Length: 168
Image (cartoon, rainbow, N blue to C red):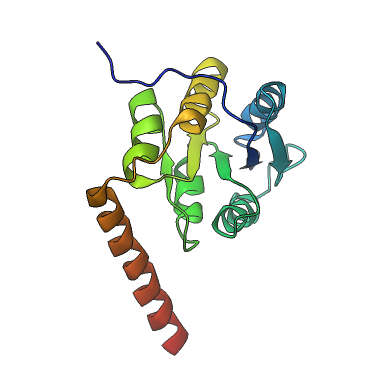
C-alpha cells in the first residue's frame, strides 16, 4: 500500500511557470497540460529557446511572484533543476525543491508547505514531469503543529539573514 495521494481534479489555480533554454521544451509541454487541466498559467519565460539565457532571469521573477502572492504556486525548470532550486530559494518566502519522484512531490507540500517545484528539463521525461506537477498541485499543507513550528524557524532565519544583509 502506498501513501501517495490520489491525484484528483483541483479547483483552478493560478500557476506560474519559468524555464531557461535547458527547460524550455518541458516548460512548453507542461504549460499546455496545465491549461488543458483548467489552470490559469502565467509564463515567466523564457519565451524561446535561447542557448545564452540564464535561469535566474526567469526563475527569480517567478519566485518573487510566488512569494508576493501574484501566483499561487510555481513550476521552475532548468536543465538539471538544481540551479532553478538554488535561485528560487534565495527569495524570502519561497520554499522550492528539486523533485524527481512522487513521494517528495506531495510530502514537501504536506510537511514543508512547498510552494515551488523545480524540475530538470534534461533529466525528467514528459510523463513523469506531468505526474510530479499534478501530485504537487493536488497536495495540501497538513498544518500540523510540528510543521508550523519548523516553518516559523525557517521564516525567522530568513528574517535574520535579511536583517544582516541590510546592515552591511
